[in-house]
Amino acid sequence: MKRRLAVAGTLALGAALALPASALAHGLVGKQDLPIPRWLFAWAATVVLVVSFVALAALWPRPRLEHVKERRVWTAPVALEVLCGALGIAAFAVTIWAGFSGTQTATANLIPTVVYVVFWVGIPFTTLLLGNVFGAFNPWRALARGVAWLASRGGSETPAPLPYPKWLGRWPAALTILLFAWVELVYVNRDDPTQLAIMALLYAGIQLVGMTLYGIEPWTRNADGFSVYFRLFSMLSPLHWRDRTLYTRPPLSGAPTLDAGPGTVPLLCVMIGTVSFDGLSQGSLWTGTGGIAPDLQQRFINLGFSGEVALEIAFTIGLLFMVGLVSGVYRLGVLGMHSVRAGYSTTSLSRRFVHSLIPIALAYVIAHYFSLFVYQGQAMAFLVSDPLGDGSDFFGTATATINYNVIGANGVWYVQVFALVLGHACGLTLAHDRALVVYQRVRDATRSQYWMLAVMVAFTSLGLWLLSAAAQ
Image (cartoon, rainbow, N blue to C red; front, side):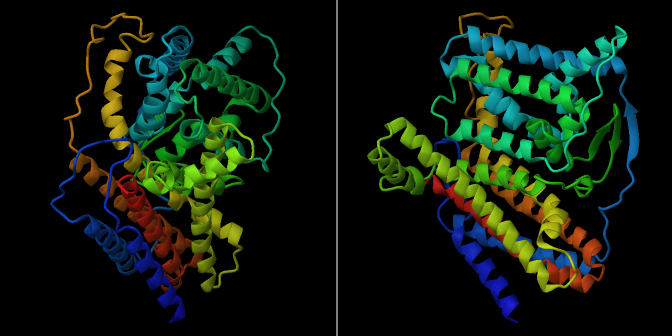
């Protein structure tokens, strides 16, 4: 009884956290006159998750996503794979060229929009629909494979790669995503084209060295942060690319195949936590008068740091705090599973259920970056025609403008809320399906998921509150 009361209390608290009036992320302006009261979204989201939980317990008595049959659809020719790799290398080269040679005005240079909109946001959206397409266009992977092919054709013997350390796992990927988020959300010169070009070249160089030491595919699957990041999202897609062959499968069914080795749980927590901080950093609680960031900044200024460095330190603390908060919430959910005795350690359970966080991570990306993608993504029309910002017009679209009426503020809000609720419902489904495998008995599996339901409601409430924070 006490356990149920605790879960109910968590659900009520999660709903309460979502009550503040909503606002859109990334500076979308305009008054929102929603036909439905904002507070109602929070309660509706909670009810949807609770109903989903009850429905899963009653109508999902056996695992359906753990072992599914894929249907082969098509095998791409080798020439197409080579072409995609060449296009990836060319696109990377043009982007770097723009960063070094173009105007240093961020809005007129190609590289900031490519990095922060097309690459960071656009590829996850595309991956959900088409599968892991980044694998075919990955420029550093394509370059490494091209060099390896040329070496084999030349008859020269290359030393065998070292075995990738199991203890290292996906820790490099987790660190990569954290560092990228730091650049995007904390670094003062985040939009500087030359700085972005230097960092992109440095990252590509590190990947090439890693592939040389440990092999192209082992390094790509574990340590190439962006390849791992996009591949996780592709596990939710009904399309699966493997060895140039396209397969179809039920949506979500790729997630249970995740091999959750060392670093996987931190990686998912970093993915959710960094986007959460993006939402928090736009609200008055963080940046407003009397907010947390100005107070922290002043404290570090008093210690002798410059205003710029003090601000970066303050934002770094906030970023790490949100990652820690997400990690703590997930760990609480896992600890709650020990109410059903199954002989698994906390570490083992956290890895067994971590794939349920993938749709939540994607939901946060959609909710927080949808408006950015819809509006700023249109800038590519004139940026590709004038990548250096020097007045060129290669494709006749240099005079194109951004249409801010393509979707209204209310429409963006509905997309954001729908993404959050659906993403958490999918996470709940994946957790329930895995619980049926771990605990075998339907009753035990359902009991083990009380706390995971609380986790999903908490994450949903956090997401809704973060969307509302900018208006406070």
